[in-house]
Picture 1 (cartoon, rainbow, N blue to C red):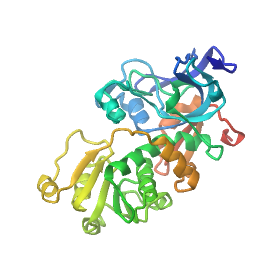
Picture 2: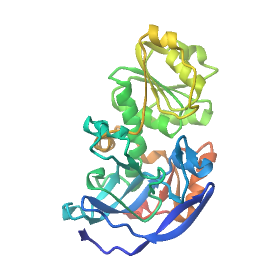
Picture 3: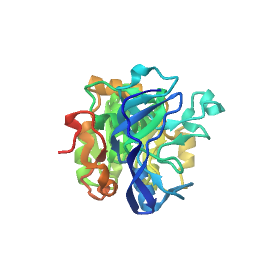
Picture 4: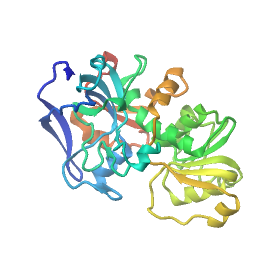
Length: 353
Protein backbone atom coordinates (compact mmCIF):
# COMPACT_ATOMS: atom_id res chain seq x y z
CA UNK A 1 0.00 0.00 0.00
CA UNK A 2 1.39 3.35 -1.09
CA UNK A 3 0.61 6.14 1.36
CA UNK A 4 1.35 9.62 2.64
CA UNK A 5 1.30 10.48 6.33
CA UNK A 6 -2.12 9.54 7.67
CA UNK A 7 -3.14 9.85 11.33
CA UNK A 8 -4.51 6.91 13.30
CA UNK A 9 -7.79 8.60 14.17
CA UNK A 10 -10.18 11.04 12.55
CA UNK A 11 -13.24 13.18 13.21
CA UNK A 12 -16.64 11.75 12.28
CA UNK A 13 -20.03 13.41 12.55
CA UNK A 14 -22.34 10.63 13.74
CA UNK A 15 -26.12 10.40 13.80
CA UNK A 16 -26.38 8.71 17.20
CA UNK A 17 -30.18 8.70 17.20
CA UNK A 18 -33.01 10.40 15.35
CA UNK A 19 -32.42 14.14 15.46
CA UNK A 20 -29.13 13.92 17.37
CA UNK A 21 -25.70 14.39 15.72
CA UNK A 22 -22.44 14.07 17.62
CA UNK A 23 -18.81 14.67 16.62
CA UNK A 24 -16.75 11.60 17.54
CA UNK A 25 -13.19 10.36 17.19
CA UNK A 26 -12.90 7.15 15.16
CA UNK A 27 -10.08 5.06 13.65
CA UNK A 28 -9.03 5.98 10.13
CA UNK A 29 -10.12 3.09 7.84
CA UNK A 30 -7.54 1.01 5.97
CA UNK A 31 -8.05 0.55 2.21
CA UNK A 32 -8.40 -2.98 0.85
CA UNK A 33 -6.17 -4.16 -2.00
CA UNK A 34 -8.43 -2.64 -4.67
CA UNK A 35 -9.32 0.52 -2.76
CA UNK A 36 -8.02 4.02 -2.16
CA UNK A 37 -8.10 6.03 1.05
CA UNK A 38 -9.51 9.49 0.42
CA UNK A 39 -9.13 12.54 2.64
CA UNK A 40 -12.57 14.12 2.39
CA UNK A 41 -12.74 17.68 1.02
CA UNK A 42 -16.42 18.60 0.50
CA UNK A 43 -19.69 16.77 1.09
CA UNK A 44 -23.04 17.93 -0.25
CA UNK A 45 -26.12 17.56 1.93
CA UNK A 46 -28.75 15.39 0.26
CA UNK A 47 -32.45 15.12 1.01
CA UNK A 48 -31.84 11.52 2.07
CA UNK A 49 -29.42 12.73 4.76
CA UNK A 50 -32.11 15.08 6.03
CA UNK A 51 -34.71 12.28 6.06
CA UNK A 52 -32.45 9.96 8.08
CA UNK A 53 -31.67 12.80 10.48
CA UNK A 54 -35.27 13.93 10.98
CA UNK A 55 -37.24 10.71 10.43
CA UNK A 56 -34.73 7.96 11.16
CA UNK A 57 -35.65 6.06 8.01
CA UNK A 58 -36.41 6.14 4.29
CA UNK A 59 -38.85 3.39 3.33
CA UNK A 60 -37.31 0.06 4.28
CA UNK A 61 -33.95 1.62 5.17
CA UNK A 62 -34.03 2.22 8.93
CA UNK A 63 -31.29 3.75 11.13
CA UNK A 64 -30.93 1.15 13.89
CA UNK A 65 -27.40 2.03 15.05
CA UNK A 66 -25.14 5.12 14.96
CA UNK A 67 -24.58 6.17 11.37
CA UNK A 68 -22.29 8.63 9.58
CA UNK A 69 -24.37 10.47 6.97
CA UNK A 70 -23.23 12.07 3.70
CA UNK A 71 -22.59 10.54 0.26
CA UNK A 72 -22.00 13.46 -2.15
CA UNK A 73 -18.24 13.57 -1.76
CA UNK A 74 -14.96 14.85 -3.14
CA UNK A 75 -11.46 14.60 -1.73
CA UNK A 76 -7.84 13.66 -2.30
CA UNK A 77 -6.30 10.20 -2.47
CA UNK A 78 -3.79 9.78 0.37
CA UNK A 79 -3.21 6.01 0.24
CA UNK A 80 -3.62 3.24 -2.33
CA UNK A 81 -4.19 -0.46 -1.75
CA UNK A 82 -1.83 -3.17 -2.93
CA UNK A 83 -3.44 -3.60 -6.37
CA UNK A 84 -3.87 0.11 -7.10
CA UNK A 85 -1.18 2.10 -9.01
CA UNK A 86 0.77 4.16 -6.47
CA UNK A 87 0.64 7.11 -8.86
CA UNK A 88 -2.93 7.68 -7.75
CA UNK A 89 -1.79 9.06 -4.39
CA UNK A 90 -2.24 12.82 -4.53
CA UNK A 91 -5.10 12.81 -7.05
CA UNK A 92 -8.14 14.98 -6.40
CA UNK A 93 -11.21 12.80 -6.90
CA UNK A 94 -14.99 12.65 -6.86
CA UNK A 95 -16.42 9.39 -5.54
CA UNK A 96 -19.32 7.38 -6.91
CA UNK A 97 -20.77 6.19 -3.58
CA UNK A 98 -21.97 2.84 -4.92
CA UNK A 99 -20.18 -0.42 -4.11
CA UNK A 100 -22.00 -3.13 -6.11
CA UNK A 101 -21.19 -6.83 -5.77
CA UNK A 102 -20.18 -7.00 -9.47
CA UNK A 103 -21.30 -10.64 -9.69
CA UNK A 104 -25.13 -10.65 -9.70
CA UNK A 105 -27.31 -10.56 -12.81
CA UNK A 106 -27.96 -6.82 -12.45
CA UNK A 107 -24.24 -6.05 -12.28
CA UNK A 108 -23.38 -8.41 -15.13
CA UNK A 109 -26.06 -6.86 -17.34
CA UNK A 110 -24.78 -3.32 -16.83
CA UNK A 111 -27.40 -2.29 -14.26
CA UNK A 112 -25.20 -2.21 -11.20
CA UNK A 113 -27.39 0.49 -9.62
CA UNK A 114 -30.01 -2.25 -9.13
CA UNK A 115 -27.57 -4.65 -7.45
CA UNK A 116 -29.44 -6.36 -4.56
CA UNK A 117 -26.16 -6.57 -2.63
CA UNK A 118 -25.29 -2.88 -2.99
CA UNK A 119 -23.36 -1.09 -0.28
CA UNK A 120 -23.93 2.66 -0.49
CA UNK A 121 -22.49 5.44 1.66
CA UNK A 122 -24.88 6.64 4.38
CA UNK A 123 -27.45 3.93 3.70
CA UNK A 124 -27.93 1.85 6.87
CA UNK A 125 -25.82 0.14 8.04
CA UNK A 126 -23.03 1.59 5.82
CA UNK A 127 -21.33 4.72 7.13
CA UNK A 128 -21.08 7.79 4.93
CA UNK A 129 -18.67 10.65 4.41
CA UNK A 130 -19.23 13.35 7.04
CA UNK A 131 -15.76 12.49 8.34
CA UNK A 132 -12.09 13.10 7.57
CA UNK A 133 -11.29 9.89 5.65
CA UNK A 134 -13.18 7.27 3.66
CA UNK A 135 -12.22 4.25 1.58
CA UNK A 136 -13.62 3.61 -1.90
CA UNK A 137 -13.03 1.14 -4.75
CA UNK A 138 -10.29 2.68 -6.86
CA UNK A 139 -12.43 2.60 -10.00
CA UNK A 140 -15.21 4.52 -8.22
CA UNK A 141 -12.87 7.41 -7.33
CA UNK A 142 -12.78 9.57 -10.47
CA UNK A 143 -9.92 12.05 -10.99
CA UNK A 144 -11.20 15.60 -11.45
CA UNK A 145 -9.48 18.48 -13.29
CA UNK A 146 -7.91 21.44 -11.50
CA UNK A 147 -10.65 23.73 -12.84
CA UNK A 148 -13.23 21.84 -10.78
CA UNK A 149 -13.67 22.99 -7.18
CA UNK A 150 -14.09 20.61 -4.25
CA UNK A 151 -17.74 21.60 -4.00
CA UNK A 152 -18.45 21.04 -7.69
CA UNK A 153 -16.71 17.66 -7.57
CA UNK A 154 -18.94 16.64 -4.65
CA UNK A 155 -22.05 17.78 -6.53
CA UNK A 156 -21.28 15.41 -9.40
CA UNK A 157 -23.30 12.90 -7.35
CA UNK A 158 -26.65 14.74 -7.46
CA UNK A 159 -25.88 15.82 -11.02
CA UNK A 160 -25.54 12.12 -11.81
CA UNK A 161 -29.15 11.68 -10.72
CA UNK A 162 -30.09 14.37 -13.24
CA UNK A 163 -28.04 12.71 -15.97
CA UNK A 164 -29.59 9.31 -15.29
CA UNK A 165 -33.09 10.81 -15.30
CA UNK A 166 -32.36 12.43 -18.68
CA UNK A 167 -31.07 9.08 -19.93
CA UNK A 168 -34.18 7.25 -18.72
CA UNK A 169 -36.38 9.91 -20.32
CA UNK A 170 -34.57 9.40 -23.63
CA UNK A 171 -34.38 13.13 -24.29
CA UNK A 172 -32.99 14.22 -27.64
CA UNK A 173 -32.05 17.58 -29.23
CA UNK A 174 -35.06 19.81 -29.76
CA UNK A 175 -37.26 18.12 -27.15
CA UNK A 176 -39.69 19.85 -24.81
CA UNK A 177 -39.22 18.59 -21.25
CA UNK A 178 -41.48 19.27 -18.29
CA UNK A 179 -39.84 19.13 -14.84
CA UNK A 180 -41.91 19.24 -11.63
CA UNK A 181 -40.00 20.75 -8.71
CA UNK A 182 -37.41 23.54 -8.77
CA UNK A 183 -35.30 22.27 -5.87
CA UNK A 184 -31.73 20.91 -6.13
CA UNK A 185 -32.63 17.76 -8.07
CA UNK A 186 -35.00 19.67 -10.34
CA UNK A 187 -32.13 22.03 -11.13
CA UNK A 188 -29.81 19.10 -11.84
CA UNK A 189 -32.38 17.52 -14.16
CA UNK A 190 -32.98 20.81 -15.96
CA UNK A 191 -29.27 21.25 -16.58
CA UNK A 192 -28.88 17.63 -17.70
CA UNK A 193 -31.68 17.74 -20.27
CA UNK A 194 -30.47 21.09 -21.61
CA UNK A 195 -27.00 19.57 -21.98
CA UNK A 196 -28.59 16.77 -24.04
CA UNK A 197 -30.10 19.37 -26.37
CA UNK A 198 -33.61 19.96 -25.04
CA UNK A 199 -34.92 23.16 -26.60
CA UNK A 200 -37.70 23.91 -24.10
CA UNK A 201 -37.32 23.04 -20.41
CA UNK A 202 -40.45 23.97 -18.47
CA UNK A 203 -40.15 23.79 -14.67
CA UNK A 204 -43.09 24.00 -12.29
CA UNK A 205 -42.99 24.92 -8.60
CA UNK A 206 -45.27 26.58 -6.07
CA UNK A 207 -42.51 28.79 -4.59
CA UNK A 208 -41.89 32.06 -6.42
CA UNK A 209 -38.22 32.33 -5.39
CA UNK A 210 -37.50 28.82 -6.64
CA UNK A 211 -39.13 29.50 -9.99
CA UNK A 212 -37.05 32.67 -10.34
CA UNK A 213 -33.82 30.90 -9.42
CA UNK A 214 -34.25 27.86 -11.69
CA UNK A 215 -33.84 30.10 -14.74
CA UNK A 216 -30.11 30.10 -13.94
CA UNK A 217 -30.01 26.30 -14.00
CA UNK A 218 -31.39 25.18 -17.33
CA UNK A 219 -35.05 26.22 -17.29
CA UNK A 220 -36.25 28.11 -20.35
CA UNK A 221 -39.51 29.04 -18.60
CA UNK A 222 -41.38 28.36 -15.37
CA UNK A 223 -45.03 27.81 -14.49
CA UNK A 224 -47.13 27.71 -11.34
CA UNK A 225 -48.67 24.22 -10.88
CA UNK A 226 -52.17 25.61 -10.15
CA UNK A 227 -52.33 29.09 -11.67
CA UNK A 228 -50.89 27.83 -14.96
CA UNK A 229 -52.62 24.43 -14.98
CA UNK A 230 -54.24 24.93 -18.39
CA UNK A 231 -50.91 25.86 -19.99
CA UNK A 232 -49.25 22.81 -18.42
CA UNK A 233 -52.00 20.52 -19.69
CA UNK A 234 -51.51 21.82 -23.25
CA UNK A 235 -47.73 21.39 -23.37
CA UNK A 236 -47.55 18.12 -25.31
CA UNK A 237 -44.13 17.50 -23.76
CA UNK A 238 -41.79 14.83 -25.09
CA UNK A 239 -40.72 13.93 -21.55
CA UNK A 240 -41.84 14.61 -18.01
CA UNK A 241 -39.52 14.28 -14.99
CA UNK A 242 -41.06 14.50 -11.54
CA UNK A 243 -38.71 15.77 -8.83
CA UNK A 244 -41.45 16.66 -6.35
CA UNK A 245 -42.92 13.35 -5.24
CA UNK A 246 -46.34 15.01 -5.16
CA UNK A 247 -49.21 12.91 -6.53
CA UNK A 248 -50.98 15.86 -8.25
CA UNK A 249 -47.72 16.81 -9.99
CA UNK A 250 -47.21 13.27 -11.27
CA UNK A 251 -50.75 13.01 -12.59
CA UNK A 252 -50.73 16.40 -14.30
CA UNK A 253 -47.25 15.79 -15.70
CA UNK A 254 -48.28 12.50 -17.30
CA UNK A 255 -51.36 14.19 -18.76
CA UNK A 256 -49.13 16.90 -20.27
CA UNK A 257 -47.17 14.38 -22.38
CA UNK A 258 -47.57 13.86 -26.09
CA UNK A 259 -48.52 10.36 -27.30
CA UNK A 260 -45.45 8.13 -26.97
CA UNK A 261 -43.86 10.40 -24.35
CA UNK A 262 -41.95 9.29 -21.27
CA UNK A 263 -42.56 9.99 -17.58
CA UNK A 264 -39.65 9.57 -15.16
CA UNK A 265 -40.29 9.49 -11.41
CA UNK A 266 -37.37 10.83 -9.37
CA UNK A 267 -39.04 12.42 -6.35
CA UNK A 268 -40.06 10.22 -3.44
CA UNK A 269 -43.50 10.96 -2.04
CA UNK A 270 -46.32 8.58 -1.29
CA UNK A 271 -45.41 4.89 -1.52
CA UNK A 272 -48.52 4.37 -3.66
CA UNK A 273 -50.51 6.78 -5.84
CA UNK A 274 -53.35 6.53 -8.40
CA UNK A 275 -52.25 6.94 -12.01
CA UNK A 276 -54.31 7.67 -15.17
CA UNK A 277 -53.97 4.14 -16.54
CA UNK A 278 -56.34 4.60 -19.49
CA UNK A 279 -54.43 7.67 -20.63
CA UNK A 280 -51.08 5.91 -20.20
CA UNK A 281 -52.29 2.93 -22.23
CA UNK A 282 -54.05 4.87 -24.99
CA UNK A 283 -51.09 7.21 -25.51
CA UNK A 284 -48.47 4.46 -25.04
CA UNK A 285 -46.70 6.54 -22.43
CA UNK A 286 -43.66 5.01 -20.78
CA UNK A 287 -43.55 5.39 -16.99
CA UNK A 288 -40.30 4.54 -15.24
CA UNK A 289 -38.33 5.36 -12.12
CA UNK A 290 -34.80 6.42 -11.25
CA UNK A 291 -32.70 4.64 -8.67
CA UNK A 292 -29.21 6.14 -8.52
CA UNK A 293 -27.17 5.96 -11.78
CA UNK A 294 -24.64 4.05 -13.87
CA UNK A 295 -21.31 5.38 -15.19
CA UNK A 296 -22.30 9.05 -15.05
CA UNK A 297 -19.20 10.63 -13.49
CA UNK A 298 -17.12 10.80 -16.73
CA UNK A 299 -20.02 12.52 -18.52
CA UNK A 300 -20.59 14.88 -15.61
CA UNK A 301 -16.93 15.89 -15.50
CA UNK A 302 -16.87 16.51 -19.25
CA UNK A 303 -20.05 18.59 -19.20
CA UNK A 304 -18.73 20.67 -16.31
CA UNK A 305 -15.36 21.20 -17.99
CA UNK A 306 -17.04 22.25 -21.24
CA UNK A 307 -19.11 24.86 -19.39
CA UNK A 308 -22.41 23.17 -20.24
CA UNK A 309 -23.43 22.88 -16.58
CA UNK A 310 -22.89 25.01 -13.49
CA UNK A 311 -22.50 23.33 -10.11
CA UNK A 312 -20.68 25.85 -7.90
CA UNK A 313 -23.50 28.36 -8.32
CA UNK A 314 -25.91 25.91 -6.68
CA UNK A 315 -24.11 26.13 -3.33
CA UNK A 316 -26.00 28.52 -1.06
CA UNK A 317 -24.42 27.63 2.32
CA UNK A 318 -21.17 26.04 3.55
CA UNK A 319 -20.52 24.59 6.99
CA UNK A 320 -17.55 23.05 8.82
CA UNK A 321 -17.69 19.42 9.97
CA UNK A 322 -18.49 20.63 13.49
CA UNK A 323 -21.76 22.12 12.20
CA UNK A 324 -23.25 19.18 10.30
CA UNK A 325 -26.48 19.54 12.26
CA UNK A 326 -26.86 23.12 11.01
CA UNK A 327 -26.20 21.90 7.46
CA UNK A 328 -28.94 19.26 7.84
CA UNK A 329 -31.38 21.98 8.87
CA UNK A 330 -30.41 24.40 6.08
CA UNK A 331 -33.34 23.31 3.93
CA UNK A 332 -35.70 25.13 6.31
CA UNK A 333 -34.65 28.31 4.49
CA UNK A 334 -36.77 28.65 1.31
CA UNK A 335 -33.84 30.41 -0.36
CA UNK A 336 -31.53 27.45 0.24
CA UNK A 337 -30.54 25.44 -2.82
CA UNK A 338 -27.58 23.31 -1.75
CA UNK A 339 -25.68 23.12 1.54
CA UNK A 340 -22.13 21.77 1.58
CA UNK A 341 -20.03 20.54 4.49
CA UNK A 342 -16.39 21.62 4.09
CA UNK A 343 -14.11 19.05 5.72
CA UNK A 344 -10.51 19.27 4.40
CA UNK A 345 -10.38 21.66 1.41
CA UNK A 346 -7.69 20.87 -1.17
CA UNK A 347 -7.19 24.50 -2.23
CA UNK A 348 -7.25 27.83 -0.34
CA UNK A 349 -10.33 28.80 -2.39
CA UNK A 350 -12.18 25.84 -0.93
CA UNK A 351 -11.67 26.91 2.69
CA UNK A 352 -14.40 28.47 4.74
CA UNK A 353 -14.19 32.26 5.02
